[in-house]
Amino acid sequence: MYFYDTNVLLSNLEFVKQNGAFLISPVTIGELENIKTSANKDDEVKFQARRAVRFLAENRDLWTATIHGEDMMQIARNKCNLPDINDGNIIAGFYSEALTGNHEMPVVFCTGDLLCGLYAEQAANVIANTEVADVLILNNTVEEKIYGGYEEVELTSDEYTVMFDKYQSGDNPYELIENQYLIVHCEGKTTEYVYRNGQLKTLKLPKGIKALNAKQRCVLDLLENEDIPIKVICGVYGTGKTYLSVNVAVNKVTKSAKSDFGKVFLVRQPYGEGDEIGFLKGTKADKIQDFFNPILDNIDGGEFTMRVMMENGQLDADVPFYMKGRSLSRTIVLVDEAEDLTLKQIKLLGSRVADKSNIVFMGDWKQAAGKYEWNCGLVQFIKHVKENPSPLIGVMVMDEDVRSDASKYFADI
Image: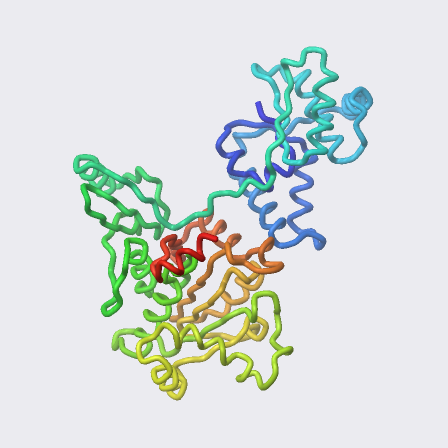
């Protein structure tokens, strides 16, 4: 029976989910509630606390708060030489529960904090019958698997038929969430589907843009669907996230007679670590000129097409710092290098999207720079999407560099 320290619920929630019923101290619940709104904690930690509290609220049958009288807690602190602080009180609860909880299995204190683990080992050693208590110290930096927006399976022909029949009848054997993709490999052939409205549906791809692999086809389906206003397109170097996003957006604005979009609006954080652009020379227009380079590099017609779009009012750009108060209607907003944004900035940009607009966040959290490396809003947003699926949101993460063999070499460094 695991007894979790607060940091496990914050940083190793996947471990908690995988191991069934557990015990926690009331002190831990108080710490999580305080962290949620603390002005002294960064956005990443507050996000983790909100996620942990939501998990506890939605899974009340999984856990028990160990409540012991102050006299018993004082005895536990004295016997185990524990400080009268939160860590000491959490471990005192562990000690008391191991001795009096009448559990059919040992109570194992689980923490990602070395010092707290040493305190817990000290408490476990005080217990005469050491079979009733143990301590597990986790690596508190264990990286959680981040939702990729797809499930990939290898099936035989018979398995394929059974799987498809189940989805046709309303079952969901792979537990897909709304707008999640299913990539099926069967006898040398690959087919992609998307899970929408409780059914598997075939992809709808835009004309004139060729996908190089299955995941790019999924990305094109997501970008083509104007009924999904929020899109997250991620991938390592050279996967095509910018190329595909830019070309679909430009085609919708300049070539599609059926599209309601009138403008492509590019947003980018300046140089990764800065919030403002005042340190660059020239006017604001001069400062953001380089933001158009991803457009220039990735569209047919290059600079000529870009200039025509600008003259027609079909292309604009800005930085997050100047986006407060803006409202963008009939616009495709392309947020480039989104790994260099905090969750607060992602909220700001997303709330600028008005009627008949789409926003596309493009990025690779592995390339996050400076302060965003430990406070990456893109990662937090994807976790939120996985835990709060919506027909308004689609995610797709690519992992194959299709740019060149040279590009693949550098991506692996």
